[in-house]
Length: 309
Image 1 (cartoon, rainbow, N blue to C red):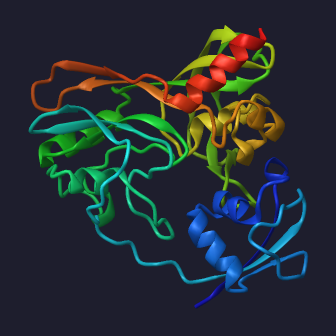
Image 2: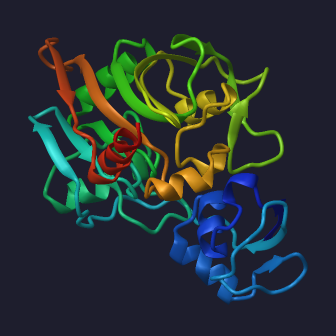
Image 3: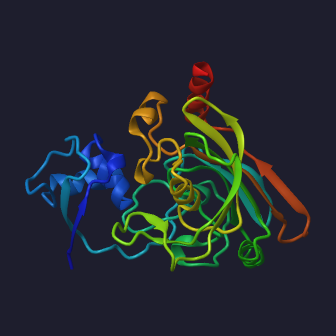
């Protein structure tokens, strides 16, 4: 059954192409969003728009969405830029590029970590839902960096419990707008789905416990580079908490980042990277730790800020 949905264009997507804005708002691929527009399933302020049209904040979208597809199993598909950092009989640690999902989901037609590993011949644990086999934690499509995937059934069980018990060191670097005060702090604020915009998450009193720690690495004129660690692992946690501090991740238009600054720094995604991942190995119990360098787009944005300072 077709789903009818009406929603406004958020401030952070002002000036974006319609197909790009829809992709961000709905979690679809840009190709899928363009198909919706071209098939007449999208109206902008009461009229049929072109997919390349630039949208304005507050403009009203009326959508006719196809029924959600049933989750599918893992489809082996090579993924450009997916780098294996570590591999043994129990786990594989990867450095995920931007634009790749952790696993298949309804509406997502792009590459996935599990699909890329399957295409490269890696055996993955069969534990978990069919489309999430082996996945014990995730990174957003627009976030790059380190992920661990379980290969054995024991590894899946042990790692899932380690994440629940907060015995995993997840460290991120985030470039945020402005200058947080204090320079080091903790955000302890519950997160749940946004009360009116279902493509976003938000600090909500009735949400799940969410704790984020941050510390300043370097301050620039327009932004600050933070070292961020998580006690919990909620969807969009860092992005939501930084936005709640009024210091959204640079480039994160969904959560209120300045599009002018993002364009000036050449960013088309949030500046957020999983730089370190540490955990007790599920077989030996020994602590293992991995690190990841910034990808070129994030490094370039930092270089520009350094040059301006």
